Image (cartoon, rainbow, N blue to C red; front, side):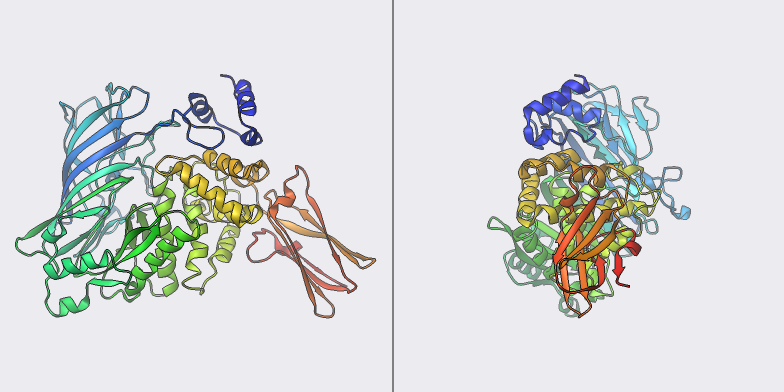
Length: 626
């Protein structure tokens, strides 16, 4: 189908989305519409599909050796209509090998062999990892070639492996001391095969994060008997790994509206053993389904708080925090996380929390994974609140919706950044993060290397990645919310999340769903903010007072449409304000706006903008009478 026929078809088929056909639509997206996997109104198409895998894994964590040893089987389900001639497996820990591409400097004294595959079998065929020509190592991917996996069929992969846990080059995971570990990117993981790009062949280079299918996990984790394990899903047979006292508190916490100290400092003081010590090791068994990844925290001598939080639709979410007794800020984390779950479920976005569990593990940094957060201790309460809220919000974006964060980081980091502004302000008003995000965006806005948000995230390096993923999109979403109004914005966001829960939305699914929900055309907004280079800049062009009418001419000097906030201070000290949403700039080529006020007073100072409106050049935002 040629491009003209394609655009004509969309124009006839759908009036709401047709208004957006000025947006550039790449060929692979056109093919998805033609194949029926996506719809131009933003819904999944009648032929939509996605693949999945069932992981059954056993892993031994040896704290003394700092090593992971694993084995297991992966059943990969080809739900696509395509015959797959290859399977792509991610080996994330190869990032720690010398010679693999990295986005930032590594300590070369801690280079390792990455993930060492000890055995690999697909169905009945075993592969020699060192010499088999049907295997291709590309860095952090290994490709099994020369296959013929038919549609609606599955293959079984058996694999064993090991790797050294990083102590210095700890990218999102690692060993933090002799008894504290957060283990992520730890198992051979099937890459995503989707209807847009086919196989995701992007290498893991350290910056870009997730894009996974929704899978099931059955995981056994063996550790010394003084270690606890915190992981997503259900802890099977908890009575076999927890001491009787701790087991009873654990059951209480899962249904308690008040925080329960499952393991307290007092337990250690009184020599109460928290875990089963009948043998040298314990095997912790977790099961989870419908999640895009599996990580776990492991620690000895950690405290553990837990409670039940309202997650929407009458469902409760088991929220817990596992932490070092010296991390004084963490004594409040469980409560903050639980309230965050409830605020997100009830207010914004006002969508049921997507998982039955959330654990905040006191590790390092601030990093999210499904049902798990890896979080440093903070010296200032505001940063504990910020990290906890931000990482908990990732439960929706990307994990609840399967967003390709490697390619469209702004679709999850931007939403999370924006939603967090409102939630964390409920707990701590030390920092106004909405205003802070405006300032952070203006640190980069208009610079030569600021690229449009539709530029693939995996191609962006350095500081500009933060602007691309967090600050510019957070500002764009707030401006979108402002001109749509709270009610319509929430309706559109909820519709987007409902349509694409447990699926793989793209930017076009977001754009077209919002237009469909609003029955409006937002091309005037999408194009400059998401597709074009440019910066926001408004200016006061002229001021006149005649016949008790104050007229102020505002010009849009920059490309990006933003709201107009005008503050007029009169010579008698009185103040009048005027406000227009960014929708005043929706008419093409309309770059001038007149604001009129009735007044019999003389203006002294007129100021344009406020702390929530990004404006790259404020030197033209002030008028003073002479």
